[in-house]
Amino acid sequence: MEGDGSWFSLAVTPSTGHSTRGNPTGGEPGDGSETGFDYENRIDNLLVLFYQAEEQSNAPADTPIDKIFYFDRERIEGDNRTEPVPVNLPAGEYDLLVVTNTGDIRPSLQGKTLGGIRDYLLTSAWTESGGEYSRFVMTSDGHTADKVKLCGNPKNEPANATVEVERVAARIDYRAKNSIYNVSDETYGRGKAAITGAVILNKMAAGSYLLKRVAAPVNGALTSSSPITYLGDELPVEGGVQRNFVVDPWTLHKTTANASRNAFNPSAPGAGNRPVEALYDHYYTSYEDDYATWEELVTEGEPAGDW
Figure 1 (tube, rainbow, N blue to C red):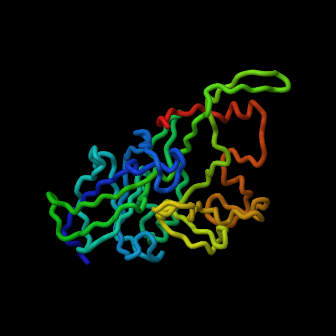
Figure 2 (cartoon, one colour):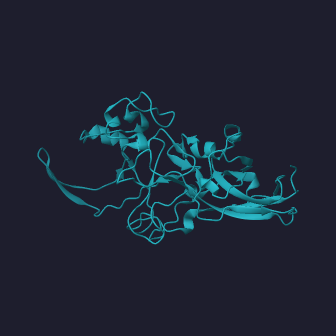
Figure 3 (cartoon, rainbow, N blue to C red):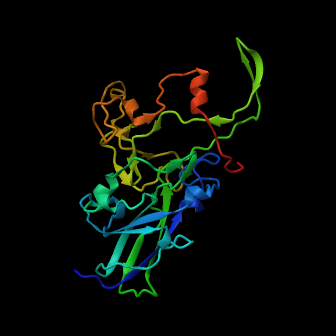
């Protein structure tokens, strides 16, 4: 079917308006305010995917993707609203998925169904150069309607939609309880120490799904039969104990039995013939007290917030 001549414009909102999960006691709804750094929330490019499904991101895997648009920074205004573009799709209501800061990966996504988009693996969730971080990948967070209605909208009155996105990468904040600590050592005696930096150990490096998914435990454990929800929340909106857990491409395969076997494939979810440490950077299963090791790994943090 030919399109109805509608023009479309999208406003993208990084989820800085939501409370943080980590400040001070965490949880999906959050209980503090942490807007993040400008470079964490900057949008340099974005993809918009059009599709139609009653269950939106949780629709059947064979749901077709009707169209994918790409906008570079020159086509995104200062308030993260895209310039109007002709959509050329039949009139109707469409669901939207938004992905930011991946560059133009349309060649990798073209022809994929909704299931293929959900299962697409990202090998990097940000750009790093010379110790500077930028272009954090963000995707729809499921907290907004994420729909648009096309009905012959002219260029000067385009169909408008707003989609909220959140970073794929998790940021870990820490605060030292004291500025100076009294320490003692059998060899060097008593002294004072300050925490100047930190390092993330056992950090997943193999990749992550393009769209967030959470799973609920079955009989107290995450298994391959655990129900999956795409763009779901970890905690109930009304609060309470955690009921869902974010799963990466290998979570449900990381069993006690597999931990000591060559059973993983860093290039694809599920089984393989590599050890579990192949999925991680700085993989440790025991305490390491060699000074040179930590001196090489630890980096200084960046002040964030005043909590």
